[in-house]
Image 1 (cartoon, helix red, strand yellow):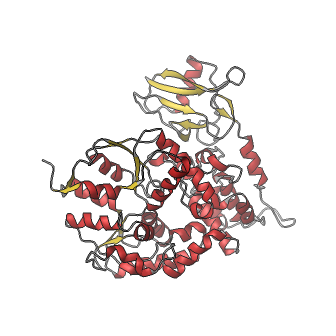
Image 2 (cartoon, one colour; image 1 turned 135 degrees about the vertical axis):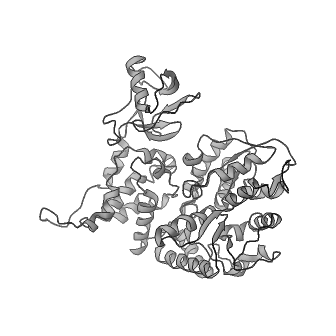
Image 3 (cartoon, one colour; image 1 turned 180 degrees about the horizontal axis):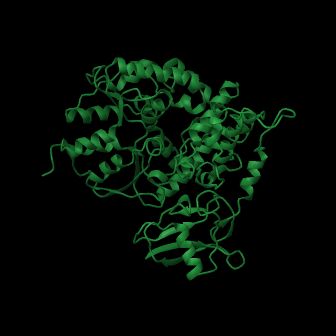
Length: 516
């Protein structure tokens, strides 16, 4: 038997929603929709939910299962002792139980004129080559299930200002259609194109696997730049700083390597530490310096480019500056090859995604392995190269925030958690949204720079999740997330302590030698 905890609400009888619990016979391979049918047919015929095709093609059965937007006909029921919680999609009005009213969402979609706009009369049929529709085909696979909209952290805060991922997908679909003459970039800008944090939550929940952040949002931003309509004015100093100083912080290039003066690091080698802009310039003593101290203690000597290291270009990609991004990325790859690098070690989540995912997406496999520092340290720990001692204050409840670019963007979930769990005195408490379903901090995609008020609203929602856990502080592996979580803590009036990079804690607690 499996237990389902289902949201119930009948507007004719209930002032507010509540949960009812049901037990359903478990069958291997059964789907959530099968369980709902069993309850409706055998236990409670008043239960309301939508379904039509049972084949993942109509999008009508979308709901939340344990807090994640899914299609009930596709989501497999796992045999577990814990109750499986079913909710209606958030942000939408509830008609009854799991049935939502998507009317407002359709109104927003229709406002954007989601149909081909032609210039004068045209001859039928249209003659289109395969290559003419290649970019259109994937976008057209959308089944309007609204999972992406319900999962979007920005839509959940400012839906009036940002129409959401499904609308942006549709606008991009029309923009890349050679037959369309509509002003799609202008519409996208008016409806919040630069509100997206590129957190990939929409892609994560999309049953059709449509890459909305990269293929639609970032592409439309690049088109906005090409048309002289982007990026936002507040992005211009960041863009110029990267072009002039090779970092987004308007700081001299030489300052980048200030933290490394105490170390005698070579600038060539098979293992290259790519420190990144924010870790080097904002957290030099706390993060990159501690990384080198840790590695030297266990006999690992990475190389480091010093002041010759430049920005990975991720901020340029996010705001649509593709030409500048391409030039920087190609130069970075060539620089690493010239230095004889076989493995790049990163610490910043955004840098990691750039090297491990984006560069390969745009320029192909360049023959260099990319690993996050937590993966390298976990390997060393498992080999017995170091162990952990108790923290000065024992038994500390902490939570871990998955950076979007490190987690959903690059698939690094386990290494940070395994290291945290290995430290005596730390108790890891997961939030309701974690790993693949983690909630964005709100700062990515150029939003903290371009739409700071939106970033804070999204960040405050993340803080509310941590506040429920009664933890002392949050651990993460991204300087941008760390900075923004602290800003959101201050804006929320939360009692959470300062956010810490995992590297700080490892440096404080590691000891050389094996556990007996």
